[in-house]
Image (cartoon, rainbow, N blue to C red; front, side, top):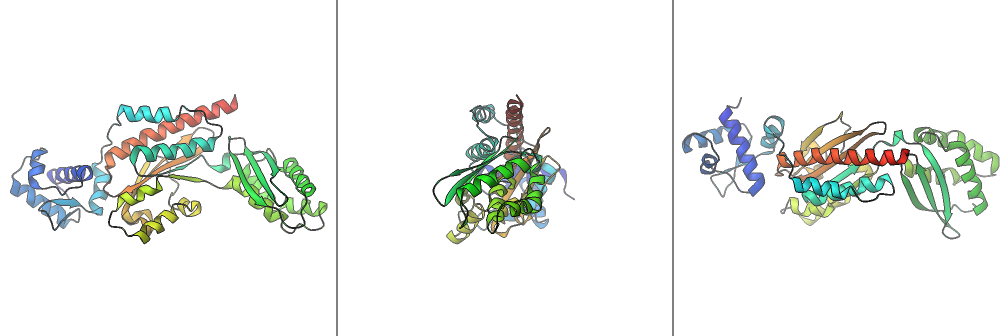
Length: 344
């Protein structure tokens, strides 16, 4: 059980260390308003060290926080800092530009958050399950390649280049597109996903002698619309978080950041609010020296989205908490405006 003075000492050490990166000693704490003698403060610092909340560096008589100290601070002492007006203005200005589809807003939000913080930012839009398929087209590129275009009622447009299976003609593809549009347009994506694996293969068998490759091709094409895309910005900022990391560690973490499936495992669905994971709590040993702030936001009638920040364990938590809180509200407001424009 910590005394009030010990809590204040821990709070001030963390706030000073996250701002300066320098160990904090008793003299600095007295300057910051701790009303006690230098000897008393040092005894309290020793007690905090024994609790595992502080650690002593070899080069100084001062102390720095441990991971457990950051955890205690986040759980019991953190008070969000009010975000500066110019940062609020930057966020609002970034969302005022014209967007042609919702994924542009989601991707752009990760870019803005990374620029504001110099950390690695993540953004995930409202859930796929709320969407309906409204259009499916194929545009030939050459004899063996096509671009598939998938559109949903929530303003999502997916496109990707695919190789046409051997033995499939342009007429075959046109016929399949008509079948897909006739049978699946207007259906929720979860229904589309299910029918692609049950009803559609049987229908294709009626029109084609062989469907080898066709079903898997269209599973791949339409599968793009079902993926929960995690947009990432500021991957190179990983270099700044831990100067002592070697190149192999950086490459591994950087590669991990490019794997959308792996990334989605980091973000456990929450009921709302902001959560902070520190070190091993993140659940990936590549990120054990980092902290992750995750925040959800709700769009009425359109589901829930998420933003997150990955940075050093020595990040200024109060400031980042306040910034993320404002950012998610501004992003939710912009998305709600976009959906209103779609509904006309």
